[in-house]
Length: 65
Length: 506
Image (cartoon, rainbow over all chains, first blue to last red; front, side):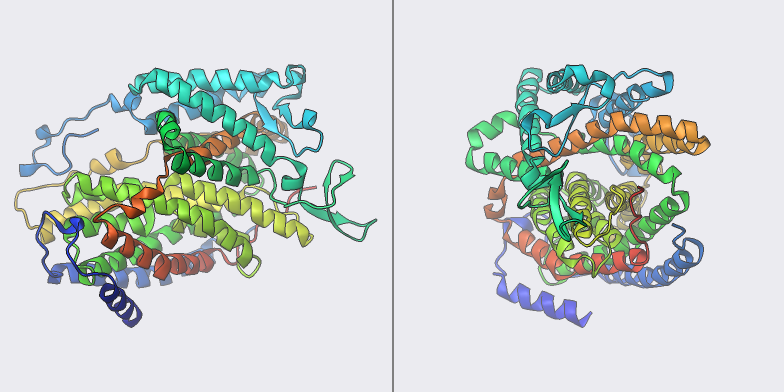
């Protein structure tokens, strides 16, 4: 996560932070707690499922060819 | 297809199901055309050949031998098969174009150019000096490129599929250097329609091959499913987080952008935009960037895969294309290139890999991604309505999953399962299934070829200079090259590193 934070920080500094057309319309609000939760749960679920899917793949779907 | 995605008040009556989509949408027309060609191709089971007069390219030195009809009984047709196939495809596609209310004159004119340009470039790509793959010659004691018995002094070794690269490059040149002319072709430059039709037809080939390796096919299917579940759950939140936190994007931009960049391309950006109620121009704007980046990926990743082989196995590379390259067309096209490039490289190492399996890995992951677009859009809509936007009284219908489901995939599974059932039933039936595949598969390859050319024709690189999109493009670049490609490679490796590409029989 540090890597993503660092990368994001670095590039966002490099890129002109000026408002662009992309930001017209809906006003910007910082990440809501619910959004942070959603992001965190997705990643946690990904890790849990990774373990389960690797187990199922290697156990029940081993290479038969 | 539906009037709105989320019904205020949650009443079913406010949403109309428009069944005319079945004859008004490219998605459905890919299904109809694919199935029609598939059933026509089953002629050998009745001891007839209904479409065997279509053609395929041969690796050639003598130009007179550059093409052959798909069924030997039509050899007398010769080069006339080029004209017959042109008429055949023109009629079929014009019926679809008419039903979808395209400008028929412009479509027919554009298609005529696309067909003949594709055919000519494909034949050039089959030239021995480009396509012949070096194989081991025991007499010479080294690998040499050969066409028949003629030994060539050199060859690029690109296989006939190298024609895909030439088609893409020519298409890009036309689009970006001859804009006026390219605009006239846009009515017929339909990469998504062509590739979806090709994927329906691909089910035939995969079905026949899977019958001889059922366990293996199941492994590829299941592991492809695993790979995309992981990709969704990792890519999406990371892209969303970066675009929201560091690039200060609003939710209505960040959500469709995350879907578009992360795994699923244009259709996902549009579905997500609808799910989170972005303004309509947002997913459309993002789509143009996604398509342009997909071509950049298509130009880079297959060659990178080629360089990484055999450090990473062929199936890892194939699945990687499905996970990393956006849009169905570019992903399938990348898979086809990887299949050809890696087989050529393996041949030089004395390994004769069976064709089609790396492409299958790419298509399998891409198909599961497409299937999940509807599920993901549904999940996002529920999350947005229930927690993020908190709009009491709004409900999301489960039926939306069906509406968002890409229908051409039904065609893929029909052709796959029918051919699998037939080819697995007896050895006599398997022979007939092979004969049918021999008539259908070259048409599938031609649809692939038209996809490459069309991708080039619709890719306007000026989108990268469009004012105001700098931030979106930077996010795309950072996410794609910063982690999406490498996480995709890692996931592909986890699920496919111990799945070898089968060796060709004989």
